Amino acid sequence: NAGVTQTPKFQVLKTGQSMTLQCAQDMNHEYMSWYRQDPGMGLRLIHYSVGAGITDQGEVPNGYNVSRSTTEDFPLRLLSAAPSQTSVYFCASRPGRSATQYFGPGTRLLVL
Amino acid sequence: GNSVTQMEGPVTLSEEAFLTINCTYTATGYPSLFWYVQYPGEGLQLLLKATKADDKGSNKGFEATYRKETTSFHLEKGSVQVSDSAVYFCALSGILTGGGNKLTFGTGTQLKVEL
Image 1 (tube, rainbow over the protein chains, first blue to last red):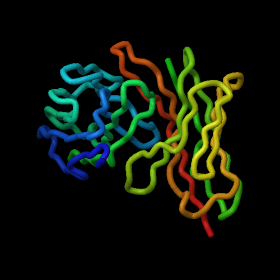
Image 2: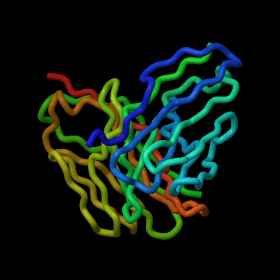
Image 3: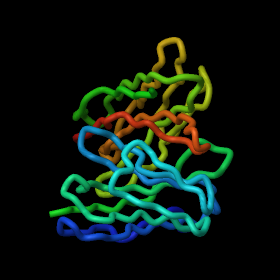
């Protein structure tokens, strides 16, 4: 199993550009989430999904969109990048009956 | 709401020293508690967990006990190694209204172990 994979590892954007951060898991986990990590703030939940076709907002959803068309994939879209979205983004998944989440290696995003 | 408070870093120790990283939490109900570790340039890895009061999680020589009376989940290791240098995050798992769960993280504690 590859676990949770994320692409790209690093990306530089200009303000106003859009992009999609990819996340995939091969563990057949029902639940998937996106977090952002900022210095001195730990990780904060952006969006999450409890299954294919079902998504909901976390604590910092503004400026981001998600969709879940398959169990395996959970892409995060930045519609119009802003410098405040400079961060490290982590995707995570977990099986239905466990509270333990498994994290991907992260995507480091710099918005100029 | 839920919150996690962990000691400020960085913490610098000599190899073979005893490690304690304090973590306290505020939560409703009975959350599961976790320690995650992040090595330089990598993602978060689950280090250990405890799902109910008085449970002790352990892994790779690290231990933490779920203390409901003091709302704490302190991380300890008897003898640290240089390879333990990383950032350690305490977290708790809470239920979201949409049916998923959310990890609430502390701000992380950087540990540096020197020879």
